[in-house]
Length: 157
Image 1: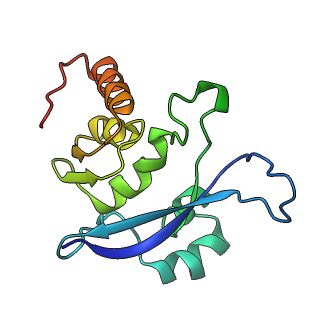
Image 2 (image 1 turned 60 degrees about the vertical axis):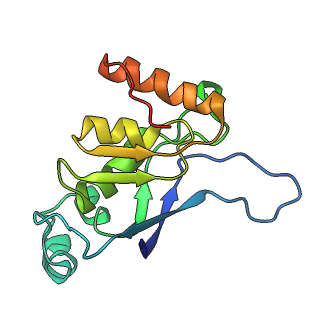
Image 3 (image 1 turned 60 degrees about the horizontal axis):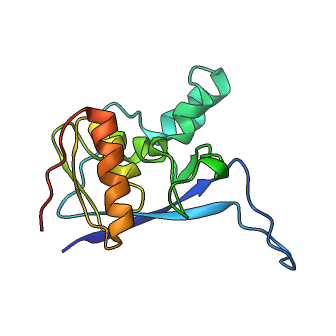
């Protein structure tokens, strides 16, 4: 089966204020898992080299360093542009896809939503198997896929 590997945190650049709440949430947890041994991109330097040498010397950009940790800093889609109540930017998926998959790999998303995982997979040459139970959001995913690729969507039922 699928083995849970980590929970990463998407730190949002803004948030919606919830009345009568002491601490508003500015993050969302993102779970990542694998079947079998995980693939990790080979273009990543050893952690101790980055943390002990390169940070002090300024040889690596801060984004490269943050890429190695479970904190993801990605801008939200403006709320007025949402087509799904909990829409995620496709750029949110780029870091884990580049780090943990290679071109041609299959990515499973059991909560399709607005299809942002599929859009990111398409742009990075990964296959995406996606499940979404709400017909209105299935239509949204199909429309977004067809607009992005210019291809006709193939549905499995």
